[in-house]
Length: 175
Length: 127
Image (cartoon, rainbow over all chains, first blue to last red; front, side, top):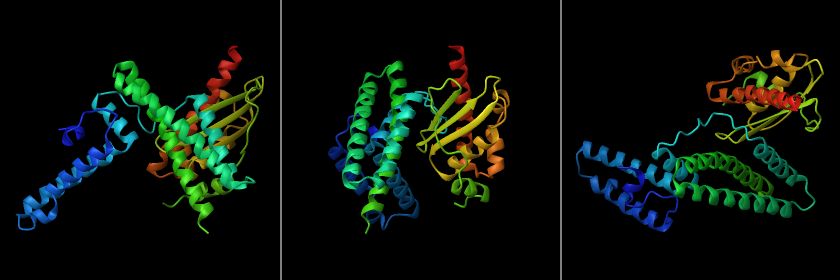
C-alpha cells in the first residue's frame, strides 16, 4: 500500500490538507500506545512501527516537494541523484543574484523593506515554479514527468533560500 | 561537525573571491549547483591565447566545505593549462581538505565547476 492509499486519497499533487490531517489523526488514534497498554509486547511493537509508518507517510504527503518527489518515484521516473551537480547556467546565475540580493539585505538603508522585497520575489518565483510542476505532474507522460523532475530540483534551491531568509529574519529581529 | 584545519583556513581566508566579466572572450565561466544542499558555485578562469589559466576567481554560496573546495581549486588551476586543470579530480580536493564522506559532494561540485568552465571556454572559442 502506498502512502496515498494509506490515507485513502488519490495519488495526485493536489491534496486537501485538511482532509489529509483528519485521516492522519484517525489512523494514529487506532495505533495509539494507550490502546495497547495491555497488549502483548509484540503487538505493542507492531503498533509503534505502524505509527512511525503513518507519520512518515503524513510528512511526505504534507510537504509539496516531498510529495512531488514521492509521486515521481512511484511512477518509476528516473530521478537524478541528489548529489548530482545541476548545470543550468541561466537558472544558477539567477540563483546567485537572489543570494546576493539576500546578502545585501543587512546593509540596506531600509532593512525591513529589503527583506520584504526578497520574500516577495522568492515566494512569487517559488509559486510559479510549483504551479508549473503541478501541471507537469498531472500531465503524467514521460516528457512532462522529466520536466517536473527538473523543476523539482530547481525548487530545492528555493527551499534552501527560504531557510536562509528565515535565518536572516531571526538574526535581524532577535534583539 | 568538525571541519579540518585546511577547510577552516580556506573558509576564513578564502582565496580569489570575486567575479570577472563573463562576456570577455578570454574568461570562462562555470556555474554549478547541488540541489541536495542548495549550494551554488561560480568559477571563472582567465585563459591566455595559448590555453594557460592566468587567473581564477570564485563565488560560492554554500557550506564551509563548498567554499574551501572552490577556494582551493582557484589556487590549483592558476598557471595550469586547461588540459591539466581538467584532470583535477574531486578525490584530490577531498583528500587535500580532509573532507568527511558527507561532504564529498562539495569536492564533486568543485570538479564539475572546472569542467563547466572549460566547456564554456571551448564553446566561446568555437564561435
